[in-house]
Every structure is written in C-alpha cells, then in structure tokens.
Length: 221
DNA sequence: GACCAGGCACATC
DNA sequence: GATGTGCATGGT
Picture 1: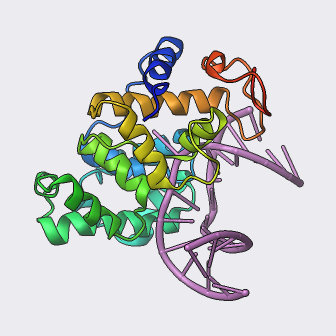
Picture 2: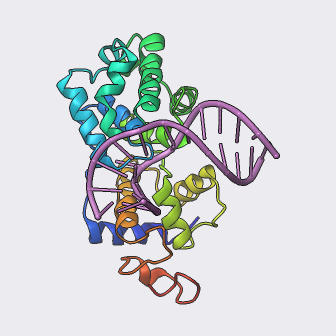
C-alpha cells in the first residue's frame, strides 16, 4: 500500500490532462496496436495500422487469411516487421482457431483465463497481455511498462530490482480497482516518462518532484 | 552516427 | 534463474 499513488495521479492528471488511451477505433485494432508497439514508438505503429486499415485487414479473420510476407509488408513501418507479423498471426490464430474468429467469445473469458490464454500465445508477454486486458477487454489490470518501472524507481515507489508482478501488485494494492483509473494512470505515466524521466538520471520539471525527498541521486528535481 | 522507442523469444551460462 | 542478443524502422 502506497498512499502517494492516488495524489500522484491527481497531480499527473492536472499536469497533462486526459490522455484518451488506448488509440484505436476497435478492440481488435487495440490488440494489434499492443503487439505493434512492442519496443516501438507509437508514431511508427500508427503508420502500420493505417496500412492495415487501407488494406481492410483490421479484423481477426481477414488478418489471419493474409500470407505472412504480405502482413509483414503492411506493418513494415512499425519495425521488427517479420517478428511482429508472426506475433500478429499467433494472436489472430488464438481468436480464429479457438473462438471462431469472434472477439466477444474470447472476451467472455474471466480475467485470469483470458490472461492465461494471451500469455500462452507466441509473442504476447506480460505487458502486451495486460495492455490487451486493460484497453481492449476493459479489465482492471495495471499495465507495467518501461516508463512505469522508470517512474516508479525514480520516485522511489519501488526498488530498482522489482519484477513485473511486484510493480503491478504495488499499484493495484494502492488504488481502487477501477478500469478507467488504471487506463488513465498508465497513459499519464507514459506522458510523464516521455517528458521528464529520461533514461539519464534527471527529472527536471517533473510535476511530481515536490513529492520526492530532497536527498539522493534524483531528489529535488 | 548514436541513441531511443508503450517487449519478447531464444540461447547460453 | 539470470543475463545477453536479435529483431528493424523512423525520429531526434
């Protein structure tokens, strides 16, 4: 339990405003985006999604029917396109082979079963699974990404060696279990991380700096 | 030219 | 179980 996390959210919301995440017109577009954004800036993901939309391949069945090299060509702007084509194919395979191509059937699973199904799919790790759970399936799951880790460690909410589940549990245990809150919080952490918590140990102008102790390597801002 | 971007799978130790 | 490496484009 970390009582600082709720006031931190309020500060971030005042500083950055609502982020309107996850970008995506449909739940499947959000799922595809979750794979495409792996280790990739969203500007490049948007180009890949635009290509998929132009090609009318933004449904599980239509994407699954596309030959792998053609899928790879469409998503090329997102980088690691051969890898991501295989991963998207695995994801559409989950929907098409086990749920008749129907997302509503996949999303009828309970959160634990849905997470297990996603994690059992090639190319879907904890972060991608939780992005899909939170943004596409609208489950109250806290997404831990590189920014979450960086911000949490920088602000001493977590130890540097904390694992994915440790970080997720830290946020989950400290906040009401609210999908809309977790949605906005993750987006705000990314906004904060992009602007202030760069890889170099500096946090200038951070909206949360008044919550930091003034000593230590990153204190005081 | 180097570094970074909303990770993951796989090999190796 | 921890650590290292490949994947690859596009912006800064």
